[in-house]
Length: 354
Ligand code: COI
Image 1 (cartoon, rainbow, N blue to C red):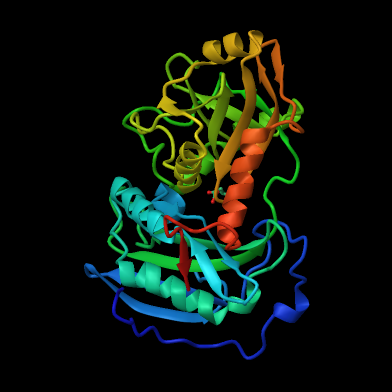
Image 2: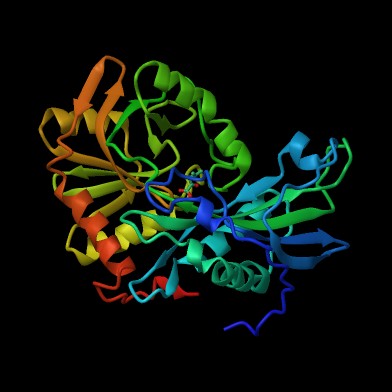
C-alpha cells in the first residue's frame, strides 16, 4: 500500500445530502459535497486538495476547450450491509487513465493522487453511497489541459479532478440498437482505445440519428468496410453464438479495454462458457441469427454494468432477442452483484476497501 498522502481537506459547512433522495436516482445528475482537485505545472503535480464541490473558473482561451486534451474514467463504489465501502477494480481504471494520458500527450497522474485521493474523497462522502438495487456511487476522475493559448501544441499545465455522483441504473430497459454504417468511431492508429472526451463528442450525432429512427444507440463498425463490429454505444459488446461468447478483440486499438468486459470474460470462463476475443463481422452475426444460433447480445460497461439488447437492425434486416430468456447475461449480472454484495467469494480481489 502507498504511504498515506497528506491531502488537505476543506469541508462543507452543511451537507446537501438531506436534500437529495438516494433512491431511483438518474445517472450522473447529482454530485456529493466534496471534490478532489490537483494542478500540474513546471513538470510536477501540486496543490492537491479536497474541497467543497464547486464550479471552476475557466479562461476562454483554455486549451482543453479548443483542442480537446481531455480524458476521464468511470468507476463505481458500493456499500455492504455493515456500511463498509468498496470500489470495483479501481486500479484497472487507474492504469487505463494513464494509458489514455500517454496517447493524448498528457502527463501521468501519480498513484497516490489518483488512488489515495479517491480513497480519501470517498471516505469523506461515504454517506452518499446509495444502498438500493443497481445503485452505486459513480466516481469520475478526469484531466484536461489548462494552458491559456491558441497555439496548437501540447499544454504545459493540466488539472486533475475527481467528482462523485450517487447514481441509479444507466439503461433501465433492454435496448434497441442499429448497426452504424455511415459514421466511424475509431480507426487503427487513432484514439479509440483511450477514454478521451472527443470519442464521446464524436459519437453524439450517430446516437441522435439512431434515436430519430427509434433506436437507443448504435453498434459501431470498422472505418474501412463498415462490417467488423466494435462497440455498442458506450459499451463493449458480447454475442452468444452456439454456446460461445464472442466479443471483439482489442488488438487493433479501436475499442476501449473495458474493466467490466475483462471481468465478464473472467466470470464466463469460470462458469464454463467458452469465450472468443476475435474479429467478428455483421455477416457472421446475420448468418448465425438465420441458423438460430445467435441467442443473446449484451453490452458491458461501468455505467451500464450489463445491458440487454432486444433488437439489432442492419439495413433492412431486423434481429430480435428474447430478453426474458437471456440466461448467460443474467447469470453474469447476478454473479457480479453477488461479488459486490459479498455473497460470492471475491477470489480475484476485485472489491477494493476504502
Ligand atoms: C462508463 O461506463 O463509465 C462510461 O464511460 C460511460 C459513460 C460515458 C457514461
